[in-house]
Length: 331
Image (tube, rainbow, N blue to C red):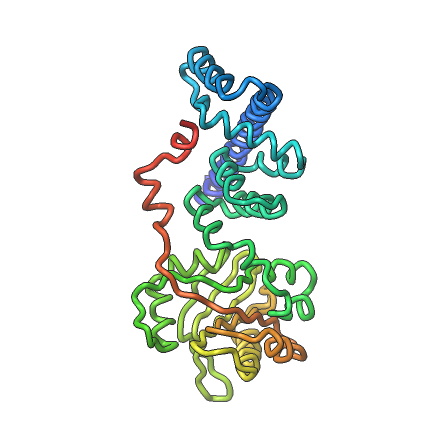
């Protein structure tokens, strides 16, 4: 068998294995959540007996099922909360089956709006967020930042519907970058260098799908050199993303410069199979009316957002080396 044929066969088998593993997890997770919903319902219906009922149930279930986790008093109370929330909104219950129990409880504890709960559940499933990554996203209020004023970009007007919808999903306001090494009076070049040095944190904040191409990316137009601050490729949008950094308030001329860069990237760098390139201008401040006017008649997809610098929380990889969060939540 040729090596290429062997690789294809192995690739197909691995893909089927991964799909089966995901299917097994989803079915098992759904069954577990259905059980917890049933137990929660029983606790609510017998709430007249007070906390002693929960305490006695915990003891009885632990004795009857010594090899099963999840029957602590704390977790039984979580089941009661889960039932009370899901019984009021079937969409929340259906969405919850996509992610582990610990993630659901974190969302139900921290988020009060059903729409926001469903959003975090879906994003956790789509992006594969671990527990601590989800915790960070909630603490940084990613829901509000990613559902910011739609007039901060012109994606809906200049991109096809499907591509425009996906492009809107990459927008946040503000972006929050973990850049703890910058001095107070930093220059734009300092910010760019720090973002490249800590590219892992930068990619985490930009979101799923971003792939780093280069900084100070050189393009030649009419025998003159121009340099793009940061150039990325988005593997889900199938397009280049040009990012310009400004340590000042947004100015209309920034949009004109970005329009030029996008034209150059589309003409020189983009292939025929790529979608139109997208531009993001990140500033310290902005006036939404100035942004709206600056983007109104441009034909290239451009978004404008602010950014903040902060010392980020510990990464998921660091914390998961020492803590099994599922066990912690269940017990």
